[in-house]
Length: 222
Image (cartoon, rainbow, N blue to C red; front, side, top):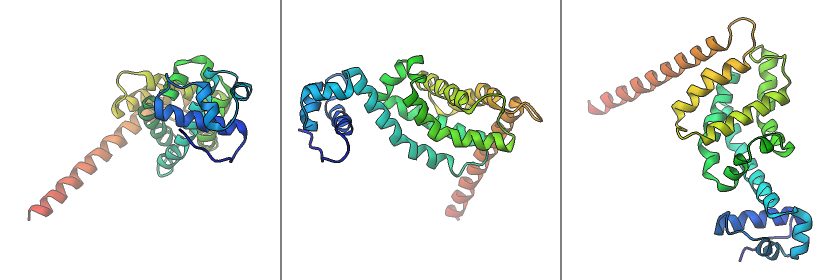
């Protein structure tokens, strides 16, 4: 039996109880009655707070998505340049989000999920500041609102998460060939140039890492 403390609102307790129940029993076995009992409320109260099992699953998915925010921000922080930060975020989400059944169910809702204001806000909290910085620095186009670009990135995240090939190389290829040209500021060098530049930098980084490993191997063999 899942036990919970009394912190948070009734709705918060229900969502946390549902999260724990899904972890223990799986998304297909979760029942409102059990969640209500574990949260210490009646079944009627649970339905009043959450509305339906479907909405409960959405709330759990949003809770879990927020837990990924810190990881994404940590990956973006050391990256130089807006597109390097966004690429790191897309690679992470494409590989990590599909492994969570509740988030996968949210992704499967497609456009209804993309335009859910709660999903938008989670994405805005992560991507919004990066895009704003990119607009101020002249890297990101300014003829489109940040809100719309965030929705576009959520759509691309969903597509990447549903791809059969979610390898790092494939996610990066899609990002550099299709997403960068759509977001890059039109003045100066365009998206295609930025995409090629990122590929060259990636190749150089890989070569440097290989040479470093080889040098270490030579030192150990001396």
